Picture (tube, one colour):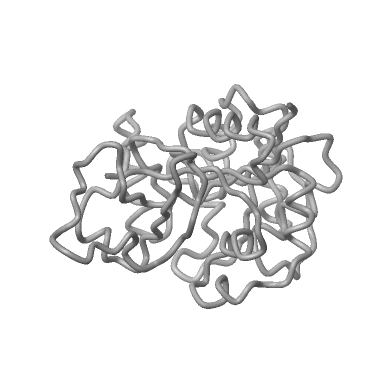
Length: 252
């Protein structure tokens, strides 16, 4: 099974402009993510997909592989599908460019889930640790069946506990936070990228519901800690401090 990791990267960001090119650590943010992805044992190829000349030049400057894509893609999935169509890969992993602390072992786990021939896709989740996260609409939740296949994703608390309070300490975990990293079977990626948005996807603003809404299968792998993405200036400042301390801080 040949695995390619594609990292979509855009210059524009509402909360943190020019995010991929931030380099207070001495390396570009996209460079940190590229290096982490390259450490995954599963990776036969690691490629940055961008529509911006500045990002293209930055990746080339540190020796990374980068592909220029069209500028009219509405999502990262569409961008990686353009690249994946030309790759000699069976499975394509989508790692966001603003995730410099992604664990290589988590990517290996994700790729391993695709050995199940019934899986069109795979993703990761971590146990929900607090009531605040459970109720937060910015924290996407997922419910899976006994075989580890996703039943639904939502910004709402799921499963909703009708009587009593949710037990976040229970194991196996029943309350799961979705982590936005994906593995696709290459042929399925091209198919789903060409499929119109599904009503469930439009309602929740969650792309993965296009897959479930059209009958696709998503395997869910569990990890103990959430990798922390960089969304705001405060996130980046915290990452810089962590990098200077020589450690990797994991999100709860």
